[in-house]
Image (tube, rainbow, N blue to C red):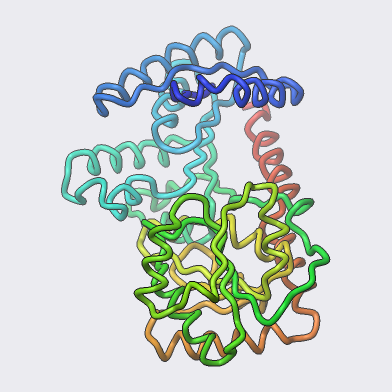
Length: 360
């Protein structure tokens, strides 16, 4: 069951494509309309629709497990658990309420945040199983006072990459290419990435900056110029998801910095798995999920603790040495398969479903 925005639903070609893929996988899809305004009332209405529709589906199909992705759907799933006795799988994805605060959408002292955290407590105390994107988030949850002695079973399944597509490709590289893929705003420290490339130019004057981004080109150009980087040494281009592996293959190393906020301890950036799957080492930062442990522990990248000029310079120097290390491509690919394999993610979900469908 999903809640679809009217503008997305109006795209008949995309909708039919999704419907055919879902049907071919043996899944019965029950779409409902998503309502946006007024915000609180619209969400409450969608929750009631979800509970009513879900109750009908559970009773009709004798469903024994209700799997909810993130918080709003978890309200529906928790209600269905209480009404029918179905087991509740809370796929929390991350600390959603704290993301709203860290993103500047809610004040931490506000009523919406308090309500969301109250629900979070109910979800965690009533869940039969929890899915977390990172081990770092699990460590945080273990500190929650109300979970002392009541910690639910948790399985860590990061946002996975399709490593059958994101893999090393034969491409001719020229000079040294530093790569950036994806969004540059909100959660990202893009100015630090620009400063990193400016330092790279001092060490390798023939370096180029390849930036793959869909719709923030004006902002990116503005920040590049503000950071003293000439647009002549930058290639800024969009790419479809199918084209991204070919573009990553042109890079010698990747760079991205995410704001190390509390909510980001539960974040598993998909781009890390995609870079590594393509055999590309990365320069990133600590304080974001398990990213630093993977980069430094597997020796496939560098994780910085801050973004000062000295730290950026030292990190970049280490990255350049790492790129020249024998077997670095193979090590990156092995780390991607170990931590971000879609096949492994599916297997872990299957194990969770098997446990939840055992007779009570």
